[in-house]
Image (cartoon, rainbow, N blue to C red; front, side):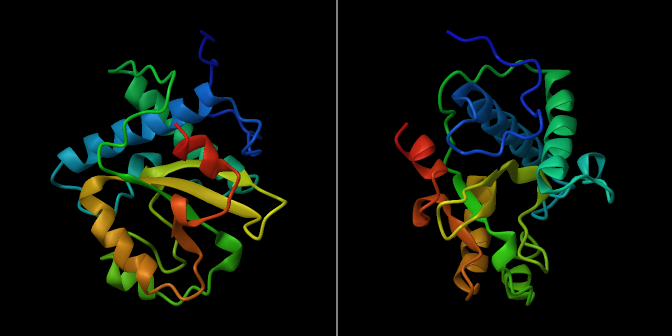
Length: 185
C-alpha cells in the first residue's frame, strides 16, 4: 500500500494517465465529503460556491486555480476528519462531470435551467472541482472534472441538456483518458 502524498493538491498533475490513483481518489474523496457538508448546511443552497474557498482572481492558470480551491478545501476537511482514499470512493449516487472550458459559448442557458449550479460560462461550482486535466490526443484537450452530488444531479442534467456545444458532459459520455480510471473501478 502506497502512502498518501503530503499534498494531494500539488500543481502540474494534469496528465490523466500519470496522476497516481491515490491522488486522484483522495481528491475525489475530499470533494465528496466537502459537498456532503455543504449540502447538510441548509443556508448554502444549490449554487455550491462557498466563499471561504473561492478561487483567487489572480492565479497562474487553470490548474493553479483548481489546486488552490482544492487545497483550501482539503485543509478545512482535514482539520476535523481523516478520509482515507486508497481505492475509488463511493459516489453515493452522485456523478462525475467534465467541463471543457475552451468549447463554451457562454450563453447563460445552463445557468438559468440549473438554478445557478452552472454559471454563465457553463462552469460547474468550485465546491465540486476534483481536478484539471490536459488530454492532448482527443477532441477534448482541456477539461475540469467535477463531482455532482446526488441531490444536484437533476439540476446539472438540465444544464447539460440545454448546452448545444456539449462543453458540459457526464464523464461516461466523453472519450477522455480519465474515463477509464474511474469507470473501470
